[in-house]
Image (cartoon, rainbow over the protein chains, first blue to last red):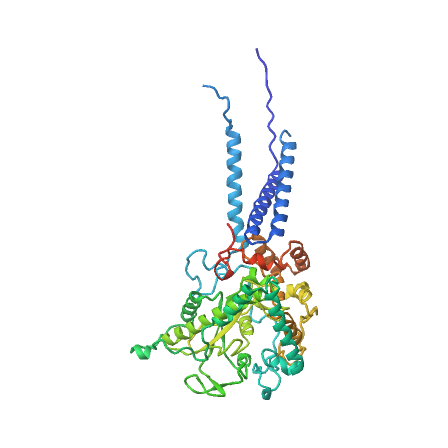
Length: 70
Length: 475
């Protein structure tokens, strides 16, 4: 047999990596500020940071899931 | 052997996970300097050496040293202020007995009666913040002060008494030694100002007890029944701050909230007496406040020393602790390196914020867009451009609620703890991009900062010593 297989590797552009880096930085920052706001006894600020953190996390997971095969 | 039940992790997934972990850690570490923990705000975080010969702290990059303070001063128009409240001394302070001179004896008596009733009813009706335990705590702060005096306890042995020469060294060395000693005694931040013909105008003409403060050519400070004599050889003003508990002052205006102010004053009495004795032990004079709010306009010296900026509160706001400090001075002849004022964007922020003025229950604070040379009454000292306040309204409210207020301090956007990165980012933005000030103020409201808190909850809190924690940001 002489079958040929073509494996196509799509490299992500630097712009996409940059966006993911920004997303990661935002997530780390939000996580720190949510934890620290709790320590600062600022419940409203902590809630806002936690909600934003999880919203961004879910958004990131959805985007990753949708683009994982592209 | 079966792989059933085991979690498989491919090399690719492993590397990806590892990369994410390392990336997150790197971002976290890299982000910390953006927040810029400061030596001043973070004294206990880790032991380190002074990097500056004079011991000046490594402040964040957005705290800029400037030649002139962000408040305009006309030294020619400025006069020494009368902080005495004896009737024969004329108008001056609105504090203490001075209040009666402004509102009249009848009104003053009426307000004092209201104050007494408010406090008693607060105990009997278990009003949060006014209960017996709240008022007992306040009483403990006021009663627990160390005796204050102009020349200090005078108990430590001088070098002369020990038969050794007094300390000598460069001004930078002097500053560094004094900073280390002040911090060790409990001061939050320390700065130094030259006492010259201009800055002498910030020393009161009369102390609160009516004694006249006089500069003389005497070699040693002294005190009589009617005067306190300051030698002209005292060329240095040592300025220091004591932290107040932001968490506690968010219970203002109540006796519970007020007692953090009392605690700062009490700690000041300890620091002052100790530093007067330290200076004596080094062979130098140390002239301090003979009573609370005596000797001179300490926040003005604080601004000149770069500890903070003047603000809409008409009080000093520091980059590290916001307005959550009390400021004090000691005069000495020990040589020190003088400091310069700072610009951290505080005054510019105050122009747009106005949160304190909105929160003030009596409208005592200015709503003007720009500071003014015009005073609001004789209780203000002319000669500088400021947001002057109506002190009689403020003091009237104090009596109506039976306690000091402090709402303007607690709602200030600069009055934050130092755990979350966001506060340093906001302060850096305020310093560099005033165009964002309005947005920052709106966000401060939206995030619930500055909101008054439950007084009974305070007694459930396991707060750090003195109710302040300046150990720095988490991570």
